[in-house]
Every structure is written in structure tokens, then in C-alpha cells.
Amino acid sequence: MKKLSALLLLTALAIQSRAQINDPKATEVWTPEPRVVAPGKPVSMAPPEDAIVLFDGSWLSEWYSGKDSSAAAWTINSDGSMTVKPGAGDIITQRSFGDCQLHLEFRTPVVVKGEGQGRGNSGVFLQNRYEVQVLDSYQNRTYSNGQCGAVYKQHIPLVNACRPPGEWQSYDILFTAPRFNTDGMLVAPGRLTVFQNGVLIQSNVEIKGTTEYIGLPKNEAHGKAPIRLQDHGDLVSYRNIWIREL
Image 1 (cartoon, rainbow, N blue to C red):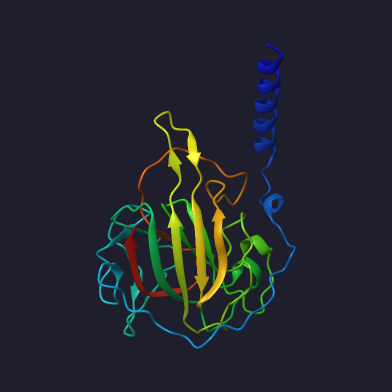
Image 2: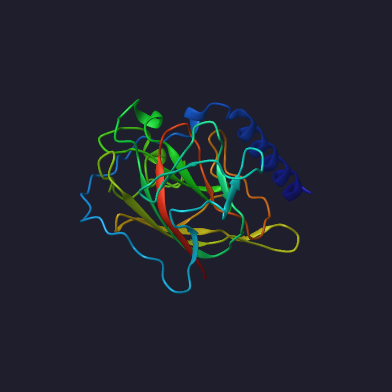
């Protein structure tokens, strides 16, 4: 009986703690600030034979609008990239994925506007819920667990490997999806390894749950799910997106 009472008390405290977090600043972590590491020369990696090409520069048929489920409406450019169309909403892959290797290249706007989270902001969501932050973090301070390469508000990148605004950058992401049992309980957390511009910035880190702007991570049972790219209102561009199912 005492054990049950203690469990109920802990549960109530956890619920109360979650309910009290209604300020996004409550989950910001500003220290340590990752040291800056200049990456090597840019290299664009062609998709391997067994990859699924999600964007090759000529079409968006692998994506749909997360705003209203219509056709994806981001802008396709003559250089083989696509750019966020502010207000059009996030874009989501037609296919769903579990464990995977994901490659993509991104470019924050050459014209610098704003600061902190208001500068070159977008994001890559694995399984539509676990975000690796895209941000112009070149000489641009923000909270460390929200800068470019962060597992948003969960893991600070090991280093800041950003290139200047307007230069192409790359992410190579290894993702192990979380496992849930038949009762919907989490039995093995997801994990992420991330290379930015060839530099290791996340090393097999444990995903604590959904990457929330406000509040604590949530773990809700799910299976395979899509990749999502975020429309945060900034003119971030993407190219050469491919994925390998593992």
C-alpha cells in the first residue's frame, strides 16, 4: 500500500511539473556553448545504389503539405534546390520510415535578418516528431540546445560546425527508431548520430521523446512515420535529399 501511495505521489508530481511548464524559456539551456570548429571543404554526396531519392532538384512528388495535405508548394529553383515558401507550411514525405540513414543539404539565407532563433530557422523531423534543428548559427548566439545541429531542446551539439550564411551545408543522420511493446510502453528509446559538414556533432544520443517547444518530451507509441521539413518563415533551401532504410 505504501509503495502504491508513493507511486501515485510521484505520478502526480510529474503531471504537476509538466503542467507548470508553460514558458518556452523554461526548457532553454544556454551553457555550455559549443566551441566553433571550421569544417572542411564542402562535398555533395551522391545517393548510393540502395537509397530512396526524396528530392533530386526537379520535383516534389515525394512530399505533401503538412498544412492541408495538398501538394507540396515550396519553391523549386533553377540550381536544383528548393526553398521554403513562408506560410505554405511544413512538407512531409509520402512514405514512412523507421531506422534509417538520411542525407540532406541545406543553405540558410545569404541576406542575414534577425538574430537567435529568428535567423535561418527550419528543422528536420525524424518520424514527424524528433527534430534536428536547422538554424544560421554562424556567429549567432542562441540557447545551446536550440542551435544548429541540436536535437531540439534535448541535446546540445558537440561543436558548432556551421558554415557562413549562403553556403551549402550537409547533414548525415543515423536514426534508430524507438521501440514500444504491444501495450504502448516505451521499451527502447530512439537514438541519433549526426554529422554536420562531415563533423560529428551528435554521437548516438538518446531521444527523450518528442522535441517540444514548450514543455517536456512525450513518448507516445508509434510505428514508422514520415520525414518532415519545417516552414519557420525563413528562406532556407534544401537539395540532394536521400534516405536508406536500415
